[in-house]
Image (cartoon, rainbow, N blue to C red; front, top):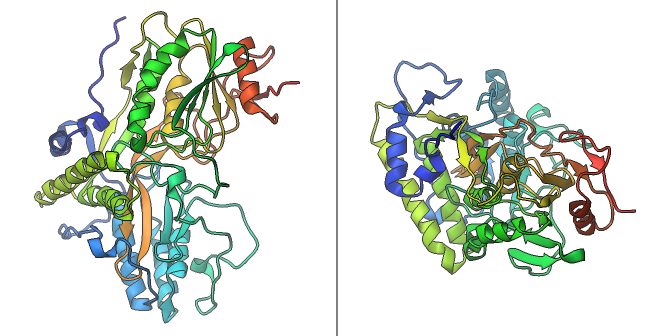
Length: 475
């Protein structure tokens, strides 16, 4: 049966500003749906602007009064209602009763420090989403992950604590001062960005893409990022995929790859096979708030000066596209303030020459908890290719909601980051926060060496297939 070429997915349509506008303005004909859980009203409320003023991108947060905190809470609720994709089947907003309790807690105190307000908002909007986070900038930047955490000793969450009791964080916050370790570009087609990862020890500088040889000449390809800042190196991945296919066995080392631009990952996967692969299902929020939030993310990256000079044109092009999209949507006052563009069941055609799968090779993809975002999206594709094993540890589990937008509450300076596009693993094996489980779990002291040995001998005898990890440490 011939493979039908699917319609171009939204990420490709957004390659240029004009295409982005066309996709959005033609939303009604492309399976857009109104936003879920919208409160009824007699007339559409005017659209707010969530664009962060240039002078506030690096401004320090401040303590606010109860009245100011209440207004910031309302802005946070607006951002979630209009821009947060959320997990499939979940409302982007907390229940009305929880919102009422939060308002009551805010009224019960005369003043709120930025960290206290960020923590209350985290408790209120918490969801099993690896990218949802609250915090603030300034001299001591703070970032709270909003995914539910195991119970820990310490004070109760602020939302349910006494309104007069001073609060202290129950767990160490994830600092926002070293995002360079994930290198994720804040561009529209980089779904998961600015991912809050645990602090890592300093590492020696290594190239983003590196091909070495292991025992018996097995090629080991390390891909350490999919950041657009490394575009020159990542452009070589399709050619390197062809080289891997010519080897009897190979290893792709994805440990510590926290994602970036998914297009680099997809091109690499498609160069490994000539067979069709099922694309990830996607559901994207189309709204002024979502476009402004994604633009905020790019503007903050540019303002911090952590965009390499050679990558600036790409970031500036994306920023201009998002700002034009927001302006075009704002110019349609009669349109719904939020719609959703859904793509399901698309097929991607493999681009390799030769037999299906990875040729005669046995390919092992080595992963750990540092593999997230576009790294996990790569696994969602290559796990469909015959001859591929995933080995190591569970991945991070931060793929389901991406294309992160940034918002800053104007009075307190508390920041919110969340995804505006939801994704679903085509095989259904991915679980947010748990990640992908490896086909073969490597528990030894030398996982790279174990992965090479696994590639040479193939699937371990007696090991169950996907979904049931086994141990394969070398003896």
